[in-house]
Image (cartoon, rainbow, N blue to C red):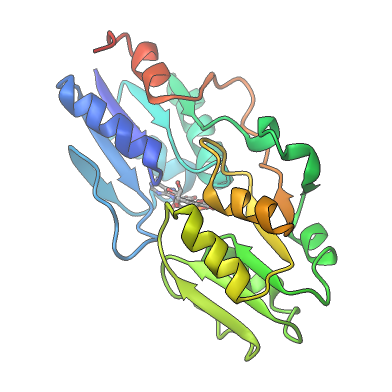
Length: 243
Ligand code: NAP
């Protein structure tokens, strides 16, 4: 068995550790998008493959026998490429993706949107916290006349409008610091992606302070790919027994 693990998430790092402990021949692939990357256990490769043809070449050259796509739920391009390349090569593919926050106890209180443009319409004239990462920030550039607090791990490529404030930080964040951030910046509305998994402190803080949450729905997953929501589920799929 030789596993290609498409990473960039905490679950991918957890799975890489599990595979290393089980002495499975595995390699984690990272996009190389984050400068100070948290390196997973085991072998790592960094950078795009070059679309579906590049990934097919990689699967063949590295003699990969199974692929686990543990990328972020919003990394839709990589997931689509993995589905297409694995189908072409007949390599088994599993999707590891945390359970959606649509099952979160407060989900009914949030405003769910399907696109960034729909999110924007809900933000006009309000004090906004964009907790979306740096790649999405250019889509909100037209909110240049209002206060926007933007949080990202690395600095964005764009120059932010003068009325915006940038916080460079990497989660997970504590409830206390999220409450302080929302309060200090008099935030009225928080925009989040449905990253899923354990409830994040920013959502609890928003509820406690009466801050509206605008939640971006996940893009659709490729059809026909089995999905698990836990590292253990992925280990089971590979036929590896629990500890
Ligand atoms: P994306 O839009 O789906 O992918 C764009 C391109 O980046 C892909 O076509 C691929 O290039 C390359 N790529 C993406 N993930 C890769 C991986 N794990 N290994 C090798 N190449 C990869 O992805 P994204 O939204 O930019 O996310 C990039 C990475 O950041 C992913 O690994 C994801 O797990 C992580 N991440 C994303 C988010 C988010 O909100 N999108 C949040 C947290 C972490 P080629 O076509 O050249 O192969």
